[in-house]
Image (cartoon, rainbow, N blue to C red; front, top):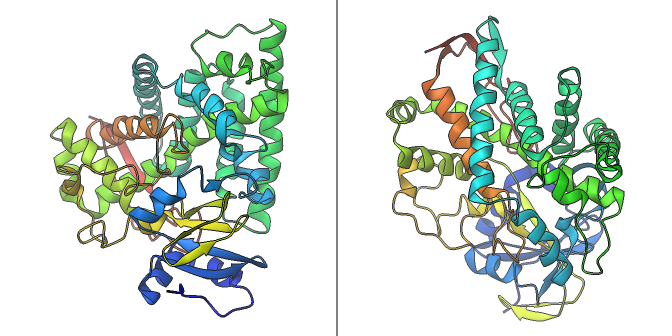
Length: 414
């Protein structure tokens, strides 16, 4: 049976006008988890659902090489990073990242996070109002750099946090936001290159368990040190995603405001509920819209013949709002995760598949733990008021964030 095909010359403008819902809208319209369209002048297959996700992460069928547009590499991911690798090279590079995610190192990260939140909220008391989103990004920047072993001077914090934020904000952007992201990446890579050069020359001696040391001295399968550019990209692939957690923290604060009963439950200090709340924030609110890969070897699935080299987009946002996977997906219900025992292919806000050898984000545990610490602080360590403001967020703007960035007033420590 032939799959649905959009009869358009190009649907790129429609994609931009529908944002996160572009693929999900058509899956519902066509009552199909797979359809064909045209984007940026080429044929593209879009698909979603648990079975489609499992197929998408089959490395015999798909490759990431050539799937990420240069404009995204030039702003968000950087060139030659782990995101665009496959096969043995990817597994080896991924192993470098996974070696940093030990229980001991994650525990140290949480200690750093608690300390940095205490410093921040002491400062907030001195101000009548604060805007949570940029504040959370600066906190995450300090946490990431301290944990990774990256020197960060107080007088450069604003610039570094702003640049890392601009790289993230450029993901779905055109025009000024995109160019700001590219400029921010170039500046950030120069910063990190200098630090790695200092490590390799012996001027800087980070602890061996840190990301800075690990990446500066990592060797590829041919026993060669990473070139300076690639090493900088990979170290930024530790720091930048950690700063992105500030976006989840802001949405978590929005959830506590919009669903006040959840804040009361968080204030009881129940570890299980806190984790359920964090997972529901990651499911309910928009983060990544979709992921791309190219067909490595031709195959047939879902009534369609996938030709080698075809670009395929996987519906990430739709996976979290699919009624086939979630009961009442458009309602905020942390308790849905109480008995949840999902597969690696149904809950994919940061990618799916296997952690160790696949393309699932190795920082997912880090994200969850940082959110737990951060949202517990907002619920339990401070009181504040939320003045009238525009807290709406757009499903067209990618990445999304509340319009007002969540303004807080009269912060006091409990």
